[in-house]
Image (cartoon, rainbow, N blue to C red; front, side, top):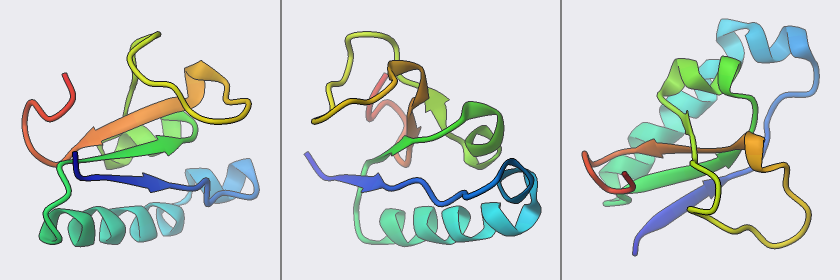
Length: 84
């Protein structure tokens, strides 16, 4: 499966809420789609990352190495049906 994993990019709540924080994610999603990736997984906050199309991953559908708050595990489908 062709997957791209993003790392958190926000340092403060104010930065996360700003339009400037969404631009790099939007650009990265476009690049991932152009390279043939079908989905992107991100550990982040849905209220902010949801603006770029990320949705919560249902419990038990994905496992990450190391400690990860499952509520912060998000996915953006670049191809319809790639994850859900």
